[in-house]
Structure formats: structure tokens, C-alpha cells
Amino acid sequence: MNDTKRIGRPRGFDENDALMAAINVFWAKGYDGASMKDLTRAMGISGPSLYAAFGDKRALYLKTIDRYADVDACAPIVAFEAEPDIEKAVRGFLTSVISSATDPGDGTRGCFLASCVSTSVGQVEGVDERMEKAIDGTDLRLAQRFDLEKQRGVLPADFPSRLRGRLMYDMRQGFVFRGRAGWSGESLMEDIEDRVQMILAI
Amino acid sequence: MNDTKRIGRPRGFDENDALMAAINVFWAKGYDGASMKDLTRAMGISGPSLYAAFGDKRALYLKTIDRYADVDACAPIVAFEAEPDIEKAVRGFLTSVISSATDPGDGTRGCFLASCVSTSVGQVEGVDERMEKAIDGTDLRLAQRFDLEKQRGVLPADFPSRLRGRLMYDMRQGFVFRGRAGWSGESLMEDIEDRVQMILAI
DNA sequence: ATATATCTATATCGTTCGTTATAAATCCCA
DNA sequence: TGGGATTTATAACGAACGATATAGATATAT
Image (cartoon, rainbow over all chains, first blue to last red; front, side, top):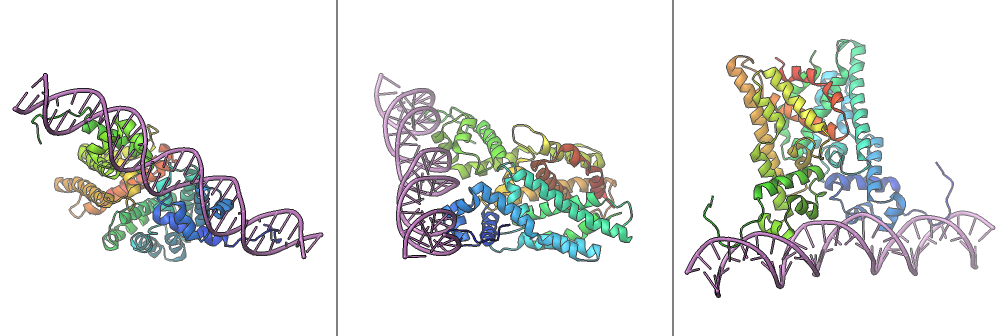
């Protein structure tokens, strides 16, 4: 908005970078599990700087959710939209879900929204609306991809795009959940061919 | 186990009742959200009594999980197993999931395992194994119900019982999640006919 | 009745939490 | 070269947390 140089000492950190770092902390530890010390250390700033820039912990959390939604960091959905062949796209979506749900990285398994934010729905004020909006948005994107195939004639005109989009979303929720509970990627992969057929059935 | 009268002052509370009360507190507030004060008040006992009987907070939490699994309190699964007609059973399962996921009661929405325990997987030591075992057990029960129908000849011999059981489970996870995010029961019900057909397809 | 063992309640412990005064440091502008 | 504005770091705040030491209460056993 305001590109004019502001008076006073400038920020010693990048707000974007700090937010992305905060996302990873919440992602790995959850809202309650992430202490202010965890956050300030990972963000490379001190407590007062954090409060001045983002408000309190809850406000920071909500901003990480908004940021995550903005940068469109959800790999499975991106994969789904990028692949031209619809069957491969569905398979790619599920495969991406599974790999991200089971990859033993820095603790940021699954999707930030599905793995972390979803666990604070109904617990942290302000999360519910954002989560609902995120689910709506995802449902819509998935459905639109199917609608595209209906226009192309690949899928029949009466294909229930919305329902199948939601189905895919719920499958993701299940896979992420199982991954967090310790399921291996291989065992989860046993299901995907059956599921691809379900999603695309008539 | 030991029915002989024990020496010393007897317990002033029932351990079962106290555990059930603790379940509801965790269910409504989550593991971190449930304070010892919340727990002792709901359980009707004082702090030291709680610690003497159940250990620390985490041990109590794990015991509530075990207890919940034992009493078989998961309504959707019970409904699924009770209904003789398999299609009605599947529909009943999903309907029960949705109603319990959206019923605005005392905060104990969904299933204790799906709504609360699942959010502490990877966060609280000892939860992972229990959750994995619970999922395994549920998958098995759902699959066995399908196997029964295969024996009866209602479902074809090549019906993938295990896969469809897992599918139902993942659908539940999705519905519970959406319910927590604010979805209404009616909007969730829009999906179920399509889903019943999916689960029983081929 | 006394001794012993167990449970209960009050009160408090030390931590850790999220949050914030305070003051030094760093920049723009005049 | 100051003066004003803003950000920084240190330190500490009150509150709430989970967990306990202590002492009183209540049962059985002898």
C-alpha cells in the first residue's frame, strides 16, 4: 500500500518471512503446542517485535492461516489442477496427499490447514470462519476442475462435480489423519486405485 | 479383580464415573484446553485424588481413550452393525455420523476419537498407538460387516470389504471435520445418497 | 479401643505461559 | 547535527498451569 519510506527505525525483519516461519512452527507443534519462545526463535525476532507487528498469539495464528491460503501452498490441489488428464489428476491428487501426509520431514506433515488448523477449529476464536471459507474454496476449485472436463465432454453432463470434489476433500482428511496416526505411505497407497474409480464413477 | 475389602478409607468416588466425566471434558475442550481444574470439577474429586487414582494428566487422558474404546460408545458404528439391510446400514452410519457431528450439545460433537483424540495424535505421547489401534479396530469391524453380506450373497464375492470400510471411516473423518468447522447437518446430508452408492458400488 | 492403612481437602509449590514496561539503538527529516 | 519517530532487546510481570506436601478423615484389623 504505502511505499513511501516511513520515519523511524525500519523493521529488522521481513514480515513475509516471519509469517512463513510461524506457519511451520504452528504446523509442526499445533496452536497450543507452539510457545511464544518457539515462535520468536523460529521467526528470528524478539517478543515485543512480534507483538508490535502481529498483535498477540491468536492474531498471529489467524494471519498465518490467511497467508497460507494466499500463497496457495497446498500441493495436492495444485497437482490436481495442473494435470490435464482427469484420471491422472485425481490419482496425482491422492498420491500427493499421501506423500505429504506421511513424509517424515520437519514435522510439517500433511497440509497446514488439514493437519494443524483443523485441530483448532472450535478451540480458537476466528479459526472457524477461516476454515469454513478454506473448505468452501477448496471444494469449489476441485469441482471446477471436474466442470472443465464436463465441458470438454470427457465427463458426462450429469457428473456430480460438487459432490465428488467434497468426496476428494474428505478423503484427504482421512489420509492426513491416518498419516498422523502412523500409517505408512505404502499402506495408504493400497486404497488409491479403488478411490480413483469412486471419484470418477458415472 | 480384587473383591476383598481393602484396608483403609475407601474411595469416595466411582472410578468409572470419574473416567466418563473426564472423557466429556477432554471431548469438549481438547487435551490442552482441558485444565486440571476443569477435570477435577467435572469428575467431582480433588486434585490429589485424581493424581492418586489416575497418575498425571497425560495418564488420565490415555485411560479415557482406553475406556472409550472399551465401552464401545461410537454410535455410528453401533448403528452400522445393528441394521440388517446393508444399504440402510451404510446410510444409517453416515446419518449417525452427521447428526453426532453437528448436534450442538455440550460441546462433545462427533466422536471422542475422531473429534478430540485425533487432534492430539503426534502431540501427546502414547496417543499414536492407541489411535492407530482404534482405527485398525474400526476398519476391521466395518469390513467384517461387509464380509457378512458377502457370505449372505447380498454383496458379490469380490467386494473389497477392507477398502470400503476404510472409505467409510475417512468419510466420517471428513464429516466430523466439516461439522466442527460449522457445516450444518442439512448441507452435509446432501452428499449421503451419492456416498452410499459409492461405498456399495460393484 | 488402638493401630494401621488408605483416601480426602486445603493450601501451596515451582514452571511456564502469554504479555508488556522500560530503555537503548537506529533510522528519516529538518 | 540534532530531534522526532519507530524498532529493538532485556527483563520482568501477573496469571494459570500441572503437580504435591501436609494434615485431617474414615475405613479395616487386631
